[in-house]
Image 1 (tube, rainbow, N blue to C red):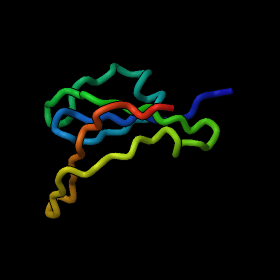
Image 2: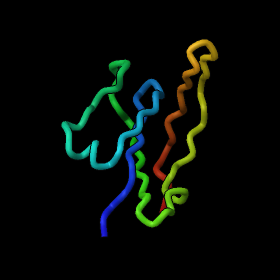
Image 3: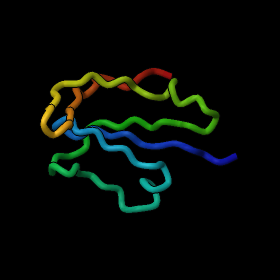
Length: 82
């Protein structure tokens, strides 16, 4: 059985970035966002058995820039219990 999934990370400024699981682990692990801030939160989403919804941690929007169509998210206090 193979693993399918992706990684979601938030930087200290609330920018969300997502990578394919294998792309993330088979390359040098980035530790900073495009804005230069360090990544401070991570969510591994398992899609192997089509049950990704139970692994996705819901994020709350902090700010939305209508001109750039970019939003930042509040960093969750703790990781969701499985």
